[in-house]
Amino acid sequence: MPQNTIHRLLLPLLLWRVRHLSDRVYLILVSILVGVLAGLAAVLLKTLVHDSQHLLTAWVPARYQVFTNSFYPIIGIALTVLFTRYFLGGNLGRGIGPIIYNIARQGSVVPRSKLFSQLVSSFLTVTFGGSAGLEAPISVTGSAIGSNTARVLRIGRRERRLLTGCGAAAGIAAIFNSPIAGVLFAVEVLLSELSAAFFVPLLISSATATVVSKALYAGQPFVLITTSWPVDAVPLYLMLAVFTALLSVYMIRVYFWADAYFAHLTGSLRKVVLGGLALGGLVFLFPPLYGEGYNIVQLLLGGHAEQLTSGSLFDVFNDQSAWLVLIVAGGSMLLKVVATTITIGSGGNGGMFGSSLFAGALCGFIFARLINLSGLYPISEVHFIVLGMAGTLAGVVHAPLTGIFLIAEITGGYALFVPLMVVTSGSYLITRYFEPYSVYTRKLVQKGVHVNQDRDRSLLARLDVRTLLQTDFLAVGPDDTLGELVNTFRHASRNLFPVVDAEGYLHGIVSLDTVRDALFDDEHYTTTRVRDLMDEPLAVVRPDDTLLDTLRCMEQLGAWALPVLDLEDRYLGFLLKSTILANYRRQLIKDSGE
Image (cartoon, rainbow, N blue to C red; front, side):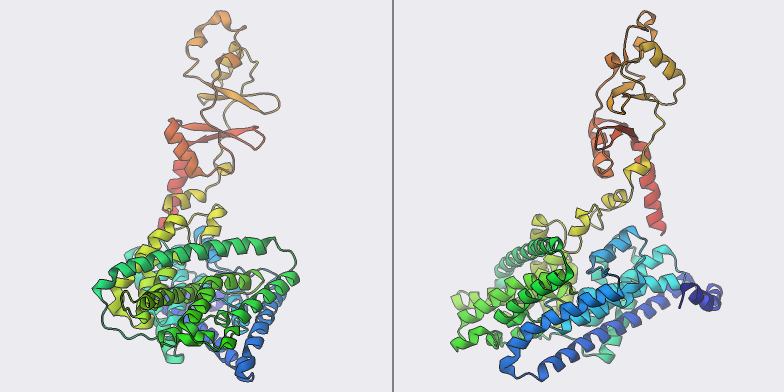
């Protein structure tokens, strides 16, 4: 149904709302609607994926499943590529990054195609064993629901931004039954500098989605009952923070290295075949890499780590020794990010959220098992498994509060709050030292889109040097005489004069203040040339330079204007500090009132 038709049908409702409902009440009601819709989308996706996976494995004897599980991923990736090509025109827009870009640069307008594209593509990918999580697709779908609901209901730009975050929060909340973690995810990853009043719609939307999930789907993925933690283990928590930070840095760098590799591959068929075969080989060697991997985390939490080797080639050794289990766990931990990147890079869809939890659980298990085998200090492996999940998520996503509350909510481990704080904060700080940007924002920053981490950089990044260029400075030639320069001064409204030759190249700058004394030297009006009076510019600006760096340069040099040159050093105009600051102020006011 065309959007104009929808608006005409909703017009009576919108008029009634204006007369009878305040903006605050209306926003809360819409946030509830977004929560219900996002919750239903999350339940639908999780239910379809799990039921379909059961059908795919039920007909295969257990001893042969390692072979079918190695073959299934290439089918899922191929189906996802076909869906993307013929139903989406080849434009899927994977991951959270595009949503962050929509919020930062496009007024929180999320394409309507994301209402279904993420659900269908991730269903095809993960159902057939793609080694990626469903959290990112669900969060993107929720964001699309919030954004497009706001657009249909003619809600303002600022509220649309909030409802986009409400949808993302509701998606995360529904998939994990964790309303607080959903809110914190939206605030830490998508939104920045949110006013306190706007937390209420976020909380309501997230809670609504959780109610929907609990009513329709037993979505609690993990269960942990604990009542205490040993104070003596604090040094071990600090050590785990270091290990999860190193794992986070490794995962971020491998993810983007592999992503760059697949970006250079040409041909969809080639990517599907190479990626599918590579992923199938990894799953054949390490069966825990099949699918999301939450079943493996549940085995670890249940104390059944020896089952990690079940169905793998390691079964031929008929050996369930602790070292064999550790080898499989270590290989699965390190290769999970590789498997996820192959899944996405070859054409599938999914995210790093679930992969971070999977790898973090294995990291915590390996750390605790090694400590226990050493006999130095007996520790609870279950505690360190969930702490590893939180620490790795905090490092990879750069969202420590989300890591703390997500793990506390989905495992029931609220008694572990202090250890969670130690591990996640340590992991986040160390990871950010080596990797300043998260797995979601690094690619955006490489393209010059700065969001959330630096508000000044983000606002200035929206301004373009070309649009701020001042071209009303009168140019003079290097061979012009002092008399000709004086005549130019009489018709000028600026105090600066670029010295430009016939081909447009900048030779220098003449300032009225610096040549004031020469103006009264009548005897040299015909003998003194402009090239004798000009100065070298303190610095030059290129069209692709960032305005934040330009402002810093102006501050250091004490300059109020700098010339702008193209890549071939031809003069284009001047960039004024006052112009930058005036446009920055307008952008700031626009953001505050959007």
